[in-house]
Length: 315
Ligand code: SAM
Ligand code: DTB
Ligand code: SF4
Image (tube, rainbow, N blue to C red; front, side):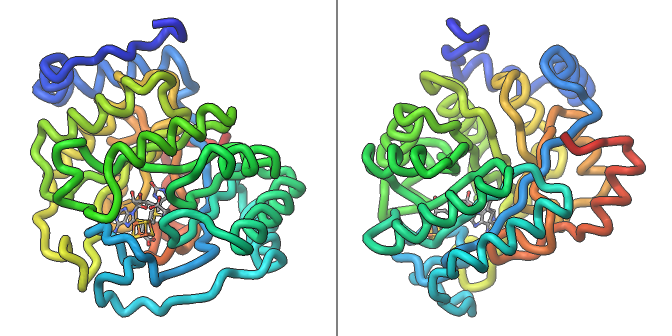
C-alpha cells in the first residue's frame, strides 16, 4: 500500500461490495469519492479515430474488426493537419484531453511516425494527449513519451477468465505486458473495460481486481457499457440491469479511490437519471463530442444542459 491505495483486493471482498444494498454501496462510493475529488467537477476528454476500420483483431464487441460485416468502411490514416485541426476545435469546445484511437493490432512502420507527429502537434496546442493504438513494445512506449504523450489507453476489457470468449487474436497477458511497457516509459495509464458482454457478476469483480491490483493503479479507468453493433458476435447480447452497471462504477470508485473513473461508451443510450446515478457513484470523467470513435455519443447540447442542471463543472 505504498501509494495509499490497496493492491491486494480479493474476490470475496469485491463480491461483498457488489452485494451491498444499492443505497449503502452508492453512499460508500460517494464518501470515498469526496475524500479525493471535488464531487462537482468532471474531466472531459474528446476522442478521434485517426485510423478507422479494417482491424486484424477479432474483438467480438468492435465495429472496426475486419472479421465482422458491420458495414463500416475501412479508411486511411488521417493526415497530421486534419488531426491537429480537430484537436483545436475540441479544445475550443471545452475538452482538456484529446484521445487518438487507431484500429491497429499495434502501431507499425511509417504510420507510427505519422502518429508521433500528431501527438507532438496536439501537445503543442496545450491539450493533454492520449493514444489508443493497441499493443506496444517497450521502445514504442518510450517513443510515444518522447513525442509528448501523456496517457496511453489500453483496456483489459473483461476478466482474465472471460477474455478468451471475447478475443482470440491476443491474450490477456499481452494486454498486461503493454500496460507494463506504458508504465515503465513513465506514461499515465488509462485502462478499464466493458460491461454488458454476457459476463457474470464474478467476471466484473475479477476485471476490477485485475485493474486495481496492478503495481500502479491506472490514472484513468474507462467503464464502457457495450454498444451492441449489428454484425458483431455480441450484437444480440442481453443488456445488463442499469443498477448493476452503476454498481460497477461504484465498486471501481471504492477500489481505485484516486483514479478518474470515466463513464465512457454507452452514455448515448442512458437516461439522464442513470448518468446522474453514475456520477453519484463516483464517475468523474466522460467523453464529449458527437462521436466516440465510430459510434454516436451523447449529444453535446444535451451534455451541456445535463451538466448545467447537475451543477457539474468541467475540470
Ligand atoms: N485498437 C486499440 C485497442 O483495441 O486497444 C484501440 C481502439 S479500441 C476501439 C478501444 C476500446 O474501445 C476497446 O478496448 C473497447 O474497450 C472499446 N470499445 C470498442 N467497441 C466498443 C463497443 N461496441 N462498446 C463499448 N466499448 C467498445
Ligand atoms: C475506451 O475505453 N472507450 C473509448 C476509448 N477508450 C478509446 C472507445 C469507445 C469506442 C466505442 C465504439 C466506437 O465508437 O467505435
Ligand atoms: Fe481492433 Fe481495437 Fe477494435 Fe479490437 S477493439 S478490433 S484491436 S480496433
